[in-house]
Length: 462
Image 1 (cartoon, rainbow, N blue to C red):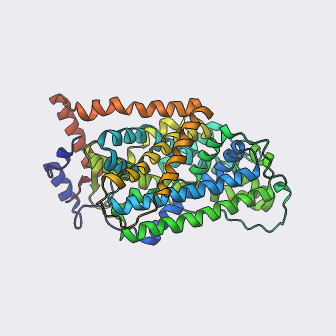
Image 2 (cartoon, rainbow, N blue to C red):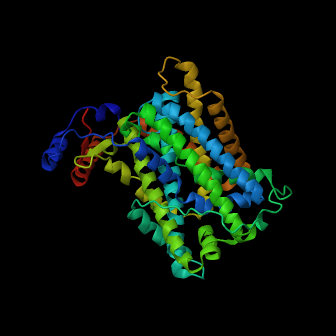
Image 3 (cartoon, rainbow, N blue to C red):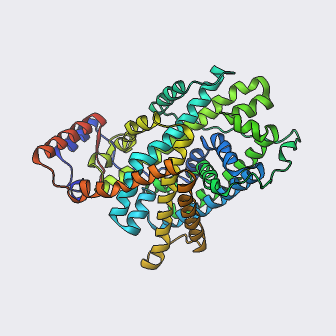
């Protein structure tokens, strides 16, 4: 797991796999992400489970319909600030890997490894599990109507969905035509608002917008990143923020706050009241949207592990490329076993809070790195540069939301905090004290060679 080992050239096994598979051209990740594809990645990944599961969490923790709409708009603005900050980072540091790469560049390998550790064992598996649970609930809803869906059926369907991810994007978009406003009366009633619960409302909102950072994970595959990354991010965030706000206004036009809180599948309840018999089709569309988002997440997340392996902080096999498909297939499947475990350990909202604490803490650290490098590396080329108040506001809000949530939901956030701390001893065990017995090294090499042959992967050409 050292960088030196990953750069020693191709072994006999590498050459054997290449010769057997006869790859066309260099084995490397290709620059295939155009501006349109970049926008599709961001919007397709953002619009997944969030708009269908977050409204309940936001309303529950914000206290009123009016405040929930404020949270939706505020989360969109905050996400835009974070996305603009990532646009500067992405055009300045043209390496894939997103959060991991920016923390590595700003604060060094130890802090980056702690973030990577939390990603592998908590953040990413929980994130995929949340999307997948939403997918399963909506895909089963028409089958069990009007009864509730059994939890075990949801989790088993989720496991199948993770195992067979397919990209198909859709989104329920509704225009207000009924003219009903009764649910908006006293929408900004403040006596039901509890400030201590607002971080959890923001977690739900920020989860719905999560995805603006995924293009940075694959930046080495983006055509003309100096132009396309900022454009894709800005266009996508405007579209999603307007769409989300209008979707929530549509929800509240048709269903009351009490009905929304009682619903296990908001889009289904909405469709039943508005569309009658046609509502049976809505859960299918929602599930397909979740499925597409799941696919986009796995596509982007794999690049973190690919880059971390290239930096010597994960096994070398994860930085190898499939000889024909030119994808880091080993890095794609690494999350599967941990995701399966986490899936059966928690419910959707506890997983959401657990994951969000860690995710937004490390995103805040990454954007703090932008501010830090403005002073420590002023000579760094910055083709796209944002005013300093944008990353400053984003980092302050992120850290305030993260630490206040330790009070709002101490169990789930506390578990997340403890997990991140285990990354410190793990760094010394797996990276610093890296001397392994010869028998273990021979076994490790044998496993790597076998996986290369099975997966048809080799080190990328330089």
